[in-house]
Amino acid sequence: MAPPVATDTAIIEDRPAYSTKNTAFVDKLDDVLEDYEGNYRFAPIEEAQVSRAMIKRYFNMMYERAVSDVVIVGAGSAGLSCAYRLATERPDLKVTILEANVAPGGGAWLGGQLMTPMVVRKPADRFLRELGIPYEDEGNFVVVKHAALFTSTILSRVLALPNVVLMNATAVEDLIIRTDFQGRQRVAGVVTNWTLVALNHDTQSCMDPNTITAPVIISATGHDGPMGAFSAKRLVSAGLLKELGNMRGLDMNRAEPAIVNGTREVTPGLILTGMELSEHDGSNRMGPTFGAMMASGIKAAKEAIRILDSSQIVDGKVVG
Image (tube, one colour):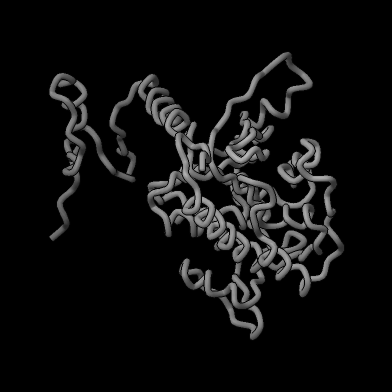
């Protein structure tokens, strides 16, 4: 016997319950149909509903995260690894990630020279297993078949966490630096703008930024580049660091442990992680091997927790 044919009056069983005040809309839901033979029909919507759905959520998020527990600047491999570890170990913390690019992930979408495999030296392969990412074992290192497999996996894991928000296409234009309770200069937040605005300050008149206050800022903006090593450079121009150490030439065996072991609070309130640290400290570059990025991000998360647990914080400010 032939299977029954779907009719135009097919109804989705698990449709959401809408207000009975909008009876016309509820009635029209009876016409929703998933049919790939030429009769697919969507639930009706008004253009204003789309705008309001986005605006309400985005600006409510901005309002709520104007005071955050931790701000992570840069959503590359180090920043995302940091966010994952921090937010999973401390679900009570409001973790806010800012990424200047439209697409988060930094340089972790590819391996070296636009090739796709990702090389990760042991013992950082343990983090891949934690995330459930398959790889080929080559002895002292492992190879993920495509770097995007790591990046897309950790992005999805991070964004699914209820205490994490990501604002991409959002640039950090400056740091909030104030005198703390001990009379020291402390990084106490970030100055933000939409990236397209930040890139056009020379073409338009005054377009002022916004701010986010937080007791801990973790900067993972990478080595020198168009927006790289931003926080390290700003420390120099703000007089909190005499000069940059400047990244040295490539040496994988020296570079990776130097980055992981050197991950720390470089000035009160500011932790540097990943390759930005190489510009601050003058350590070697590592090139297309990613274990140190993951491990440095994990260490940055531990440093952030240490600072938060040893500080008295009121309204996002360290007061004791």
